[in-house]
Amino acid sequence: MNTQEMMRILDGIARDRRIDKAQLIKDLEQAMVSAARKFYNTLDTEEFACSFDQMSGELKLTRHGEPLEMKPEGLGRIAAQTFKQVMIQRFRDDERTSVLDEFSKRVGEIVTGTVQRYEGGALVVTIDRAEAFMPRSEQIPGEQFQAGDRIRCMILDVRDVGNQIKIVLTRANPDFIKRLFEVEVPEVAEHIIEIKAMAREAGYRTKIAVTSVDNKVDAVGACVGVRGSRIKNIVDELNGEKIDIVRWNESSQILIQNSLKPAEVAEISLCFELGRATVVVRDDQLSLAIGKRGQNVRLAARLTGWDIDILTPVEFEKGLEILNQTLTGIEGVTEAMVDRLAALGMISVFDIEEVGAEVLVNELELPQETADKILEIAGVKAKEVAIQQAKDKAEAEQKKREDEEATRRLLGEDGLGIGGVSAEADARAADILGGGSTPTSQTPPSETPPSEAPTEAEAPAAGGPS
Image 1 (tube, rainbow, N blue to C red):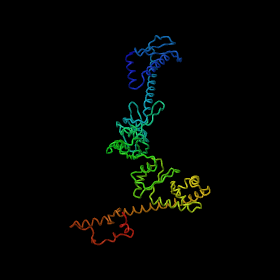
Image 2 (spheres, rainbow, N blue to C red):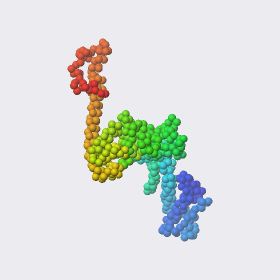
Image 3 (cartoon, rainbow, N blue to C red):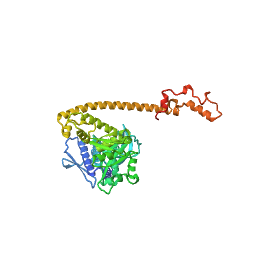
Image 4 (cartoon, one colour):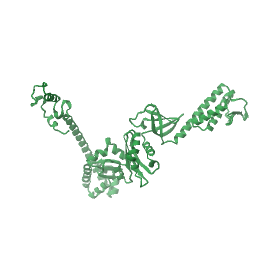
């Protein structure tokens, strides 16, 4: 046995696999004991013992405490195979334990790896000496990588599954953006700027609320950087995902107002009993506040923790008017009580139906019978209003379809040109203006053929809205 070569091999394994050398020596001794038991065909686990001399690299076997004269290489082929299998299995177990211990401490850390392949939608990435995977749910929609690409991601979880360690990566988790801010913005890493809340729809948009513990440091400005340099690096890493940096405020009303930017908010009414915020915006700010497919208001709701309803001034006043008319007709209910309910954020009959009788009794000091009657009448009115709203919505959609159809006719679909003039008439006019060419029709230019005269249905459309 070449003891020096064995020592070098042990050192190399300990260094490359990051396994404690003392643990490898224990494995070596145990493998030798297993080989001796196999050779002597014994089941007694205490019969043999082995010690390894780290200075000389010699293995010494003992049997019942007495030195065994037989050298390890004399144990035979079957015992040597047993020795090999035990060593391989124990080395694998040690490496798995080492990987688990190392990466468990790195959960939440940003790492850079090399893309290997896709397996059933999951992306397999090599990180350091381990192989990790990124499930489809943790990938940013639309991103595609090729084998060999460098990828930046965050370690989300480390799981011990049977005989292997599964390292889960993410790029879609909101904490990934938080870690990117810690990398790009030193004030965040030093906890001068604190990230208070975050809401994200991976690949599309993120809202992040920040505040500063130092009055001299502008939280939003520091995160954006000079000419947007810091935020640009993060956006580039996320392939153009929009990031809204919101100034945090302990006041829910101010925070909601900030979170809905760039839309301008006219009024905010909070209902703590329902956890709902009714936000009033001007008509020209409505689409901006709601955002594309409701994204802006949805992210603002998740960021602030409030259920946000966006209304125009007309809708807000109409809801209050219906509430006032419904409740003031009930005996024992005054306008002051209705105003009190509005101040508490209950601005429609739907809100009254949701809060329940207990709130009405406590806040308005009403008898239980009156509160029950209010709920009953508000429930009936709420159904009527819901039916009317559904009818109005259907009529609005029908009108929208009619306007779109009129616009298509106006813009020349189905062979019509601008203003309802046919393509054939356009060609005839071009021939006449060109001079010297033979007209395609004998009809004088000043006359309109009967077939091209606008019908009664088309005439209004030609002058309709575009």
